[in-house]
Image (tube, rainbow over all chains, first blue to last red; front, side, top):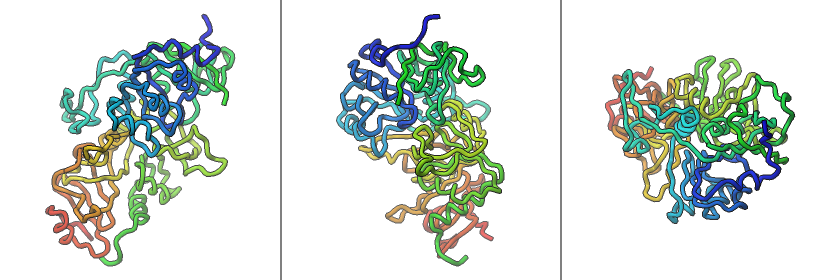
Amino acid sequence: MPSKISDSVLSAVSVIPDRATVMIGGFGLAGQPQALIDGLIEHGATDLTIVNNNAGNGDVGLALLIKLGRVKKIICSFPRQVDSHHFDEAYRAGKIELEVVPQGNLAERIRAAGAGIGGFFSPTGYGTLLAEGKETRTIEGKNYVLESPIHADFALIKAHKADPLGNLIYRKTARNFGPVMATAATQTIVQVSEIVEVGDLDPEHIITPGIFVNKIVQVTA
Amino acid sequence: MSGAPLSRAEMAQRVAADIPVGAFVNLGIGIPTSVSNYLTAEQEVTLHTENGMLGMGPEAHGDEVDPDLINAGKIAVTELPGCSYFHHADSFAMMRGGHLDIAVLGAFQVSAAGDLANWHTGAPDAIPAVGGAMDLAVGAKQVFVMMELTTKSGAAKIVEQLTYPATGLACVSRIYTEQAIFDITPAGVVVTDVFGEATVDSLRELTGLPLLDQTA
């Protein structure tokens, strides 16, 4: 099997075209693949649809991508934070489209895409603004909203260790959206702290099997 | 009842004291987080954080700070023995699937039917952000709300009908305020405890609701 290891961040992300839908892992800065986002900024792809829990923190990573005007639309659960000033400015200027999704529905819509599920009924959001216009159903006396899968062209995620087959382990709460996003994209590109030999990861401990991973780049802190 | 209205710390103490032994609990961002200060080791409560951890420990300080280990408020926290990590879809399956016993949340308003508003003011210039609030509201077996009973202008935040956009419908079971504790029941809103100058009658006048009196 050919190795999935890329020798540079830029070569790994330069396949991402304009107008792509890109999932970016992370919850705040934990698990955010900073180097891959920097590579995406350098590569220059624009008119992107981004799927992330947040809408950027501070002045780096996703926040910088938004500041530079590369993001046409963002699908996220929690855009407004104390340090989301670049998003706030772009949103108030009408330069970015926002789809707010409850966090669990966001995770499950991504999971559904990766698992080949065409939609699912969720109780979350029933009777709220975020369910307006969506099909509802009462099942065994409880009310649900039909939610659709979110697919992506690319997922950019961060893991702790990988082997050349793309098997991944994560670290603490930096795992967050990585495993589900890896399943939902046509191509998954992973930033890792360390690449180990095939056989070095305990198969019982692998969180993301390599079948979901296309490229790995080692980025040492 | 005599004494003063409850301070925020006393509210957190009351909530902590009402959490049953062995419960799995999610504490919302803000005031609810302070409940963890009053949970005792004997209660053996396991804290869940939506970003993928059970068995969350106290806030991290100094050398303990690890950027890969944060809570839902993005504050650095610590591990307790027996903790576990999982991805986001599993974390919310835990919540939505009814595996968490109690979520403690803040609120803008709660209706007499237990509808919760805590995510969006509805103001035209507000940027909506929901996070995990809607999932917690419908997912946990019980939702406890901690809030001041009135707005800055003195209007009651327990209301007949929500005027803010809803987070979830008929999801709140109990409300802790500085003036009183309320249970939302099929029979109506029940006052179980009053503090300071508050009486059930004064609370009826404030809220305009036919509150039931179960104060001891």
